Length: 561
Ligand SMILES: Nc1ncnc2c1ncn2[C@@H]1O[C@H](COP(=O)(O)OP(=O)(O)OP(=O)(O)O)[C@@H](O)[C@H]1O
Image 1: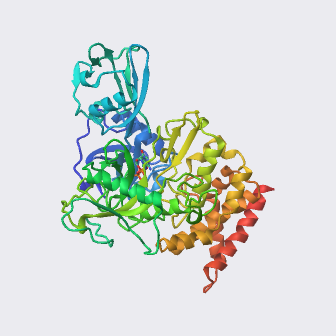
Image 2: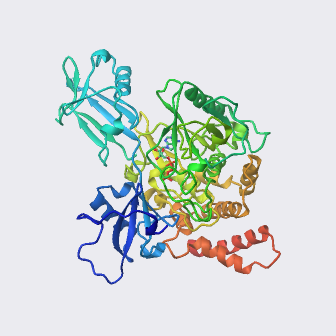
Image 3: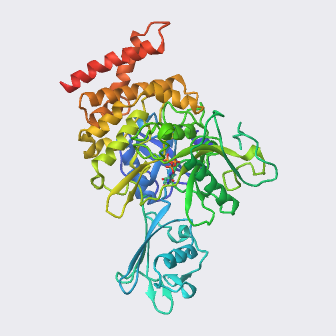
């Protein structure tokens, strides 16, 4: 996309131009936010982090909440330079905001009682009152309850999204318990603080939606012989009941794709998360307005647009429980805790239908339906010190196996249990099993737990992994795994297994998979390249994999000397 495609706003005082920077290597690029475009002068040697800092200074958007995309690629590495991503004069940087959905509310009464709530920004004040009533019996009389913000009375229909409109997602209200509940300017002792935690083109091949219905949901089977696990049926049925009771899907403010929270039949809790393939980043109906991919490649190298859902399901299927394959044990949650995920088709007006909506199969969407996991935010909000070694290690095993190209801390939710333990929940696996290792990044690489050796239990789990069986399993579920993705799985599983045999830590293994700097190949890429050079015409995949194995051995032996 060139600057000519968009209307450019005049440069105003607090524009994104550098003040007093030399012109030597400076270029003008364009920043596009929600369709509004602002010119921005940068140096080609500026890092992505420094560009984000400038956007933060000029536009007041925290750099943590910024996702920058240029020419169909996410500028994911903060330490990489603008020029390394190939950004040149006149290019457009698309800024996608990652607003938090979940808001933590601490209600403190004058008597010193305290109640904690977690709501999302699309809930209203009436909903909070219901929650207060349920939790704090006798705390307030729901009938007589009124909540104020400053001098303004908040009516029951008011959404937290509209109250919590500051970028850092924090609202301070006051509760004055008199005959009524009142909220006004901040006062420490009487505080109700609302803290936002950081936390139709796609016509499908699925079965026809019954005529005359305005919503629909059913699983999509790649293989008609598959028996859907009972817990997945429960998930599908609970989601269906929510739709039947007119509790519509609610779009998440986070994320670059269309992600919808599906409500239960009472409209009180979320039961699942639906991600339609035609709304993925760079897909034709992406609600964030990102340009459509020019070559079908997804936001991360080696991934394809509209294949996010199949990868989400694959990550779940391959997250085998400790006790053995799910097909035998029937256990819902696996070693790493990927939430149960299933492929479905869903029809609803609330999804993004830029060309209009009609109750017909044509407008139903294929996508992944994942169990909604109650959480207290994501790992971007906490320092890694809060997590146990085992919790971090389970994520590292998953990411290494799946060669995850999108493991930033925001894609790990956390939940504290009553005993104060913090459980990590990995989500967002749409960029797993890429065809190449180029974009593999693991935020946990820099966490201290990654430098600890795996426990004997974890080593046993890793030893039990079998990439060939995994590929068969994915095929059985109907994903005709492309040869390149199967190769990725074989090589990453091999690396993990060989690594633990030599006592390597997740850090050591992960470092082999990730590029240290953007344009320098990682060790695993070098190994693959070396093996490719040895490959003679007519040699099959197994010979290639054997050659990778031998080269990998010699690299690892050197490492562990
Ligand atoms: N299984 C889940 N349980 C609870 N919340 C979830 C779940 N999956 C997603 N979410 C919430 O929805 C938000 C958006 O989801 P997700 O990160 O998967 O979307 P995305 O568009 O793929 O994001 P990204 O831009 O990080 O690639 C998450 O940040 C999280 O808050």
